[in-house]
Length: 140
Image 1 (cartoon, rainbow, N blue to C red):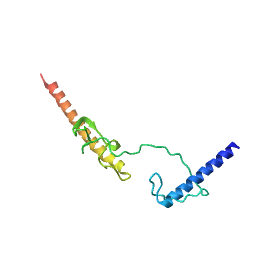
Image 2: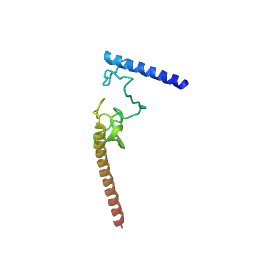
Image 3: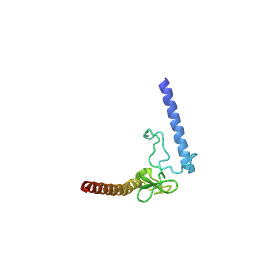
Image 4: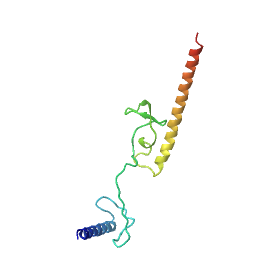
């Protein structure tokens, strides 16, 4: 009996929710500011699918300020030595909106820029170390 009562309550809630949705669609908006209702009206007699939706952080607009070469900048706009950023942690490329899919391009472009820059720095440090080692070995 309890299961039947619960089922009836769920059905009543579903019907009321779908009626609210249809009314909001017909009015052109709801209390939350939604103005697009591509599937309205939804009918309780139709085949309906449900899924669990949980909030996640997918992409943020804004983030660490950085230079064109990937160097992270301080609040004063100065480079922070040895600190680089690429991908979704960075900000300022898209402003307050972006086209879907652009984050992958952003990761690739700035990841390549930072990776190439750091590889060149590592090669330079290796050459300097080798030169110092050679000079030390040939000193009397």
